[in-house]
Amino acid sequence: MPKIKTTKSLRDRIKVTGSGKLLRRKMGQRHHAAAKRRTNLRRGKEPLLVTGAWGKKIKKILGI
Image (tube, rainbow, N blue to C red; front, side):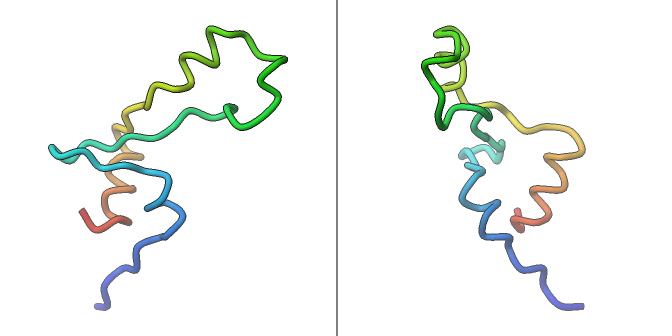
């Protein structure tokens, strides 16, 4: 059985911490900032933890 290739787009979007946790950015932070509430923009800077079934799938794809 061949090794699974790492999905490069996923590798760039997800950060793996030292303990193996997965962090991702929140959506909707790229443009149209003037139309969004300041609170939401501020909260968008905080990275989110990826857990559960998605976390397991992503770890498998990244080869962790």
